[in-house]
Image 1 (tube, rainbow, N blue to C red):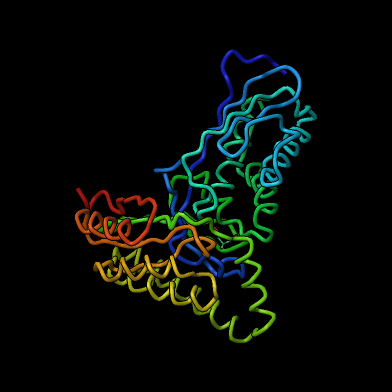
Image 2 (tube, rainbow, N blue to C red):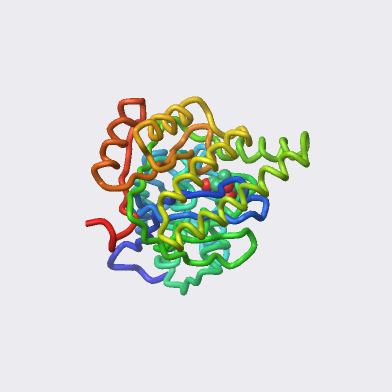
Length: 317
Ligand code: MEV
């Protein structure tokens, strides 16, 4: 390995699922947006002896990392093994602005930034296929049965329309309005929620299949609304999607409260986003003042943090 004068750096960002979470595990489409307001940087430098991780979750020798970092350690080992390099002798710093376990793609983004930093450190050529392969190692440990949507969206700058097992398609998004994302402050439970939807299938196959299928149709209608720049219709669809997710048992009281708060403040639509059972919700507003008002009400109703995202540069000043 060459000694680098500069540390190797890898970056990635979070994500918001606009619509289609959970159904996407069952081959239905989903639409995800890159969440550029929250990103992660992994920096790697050489050091002597055992590798060391410096992060908000754990700081110490990699051998002593807690079980929650198992996906990180396994991804590190897999990349180093593929290069025939030792995973010792690395100082790895993780700086993440993405709240962990909130359905914002934190685990996939950290894996993506780690893989990019390792490829740069060992001076290897990376491509999309390799990136996907190594992030998937992390995501399979973190979530059990990932659809691949988080794995795909954390490394690209455009919204994606995605069906599991197919090439994701970039979606151009230009809408007269704003997206508010609000964090309940509660850890989401993606793995448990994904498992429980699987259990619903076992208990009541026809009903669950019908629900997932109709959720897939909603996502396709959302795609058409986006293509027609029709934020009003998109809002209605998002609120309906929250109903589907509730029936799939992945909402909870806190998410429902924030969704209701947004709707009673005139949001064009609102739903949970990501794995659910905690984590974040999203709402649509017609202009920036409306978005700020909704954001204030959400904070008043218990949200820990909110973000406002412009959905259309050509519409909104
Ligand atoms: C998690 O961000 C999205 C889920 O649909 C799981 C997955 O697609 O892997 C809940």
